[in-house]
Length: 293
Image (cartoon, rainbow, N blue to C red; front, side):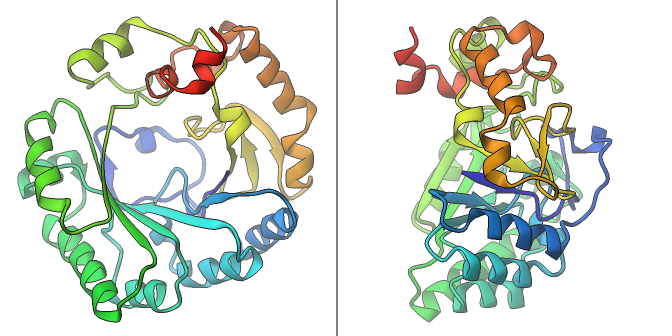
């Protein structure tokens, strides 16, 4: 899987996200960088591309052009995007649906009501977000399209805990899938807002197996830098430069393999970005982790 940061800018200031602390430039990926990466991936066993990373890709006003480049260059790869939907305007929705530019679109909506959503996803307007999502869903239905698959996500955390059931009940008939995710502390940079049993695991556990990320995903930032992990939002662990190296060379390179070796040896203490990561809560019950115990 490849994650491409079509924009590192974001129109929201969410309480669970360290975007405000990011020191990297808030910019759009150049079309030259995108085309170079896509060319590198042609003929390779790539299964999925996340067309976003640490920003909202719809901050890029040329998003439709970028989606067309990816779809044309890698027609057999599954294309996925996730958005807060604040900038998902009607004309953009129509082009995505009419041209079948995506396989999956996910809407990140934390809260069932205006007060909760605007308190968590600051700078967003509840009516605009919900209106944009409803227009997308209605237009897709009107056109009789199967693509993209529609998903909606809420994070189970202290501010949303009491609304989860109502959220699922409301959205389940309207979208293809509803996801309830546990809370990510972004390498320990955000206060842990997990609840219940997950909070105990998040506060009291750690990686006792090799993290899946370096074997499963490569992250390319807006300026073409390749990162160790999608959680390393400030790119403190750069593993290559997509404008100077091929994607395959980065993936098989000495730097990334060095991190993989350390993780296999459970030497997380020597990897600065991994020391306080709570992502083990998403992986510890997966086959990958169990094989290593």
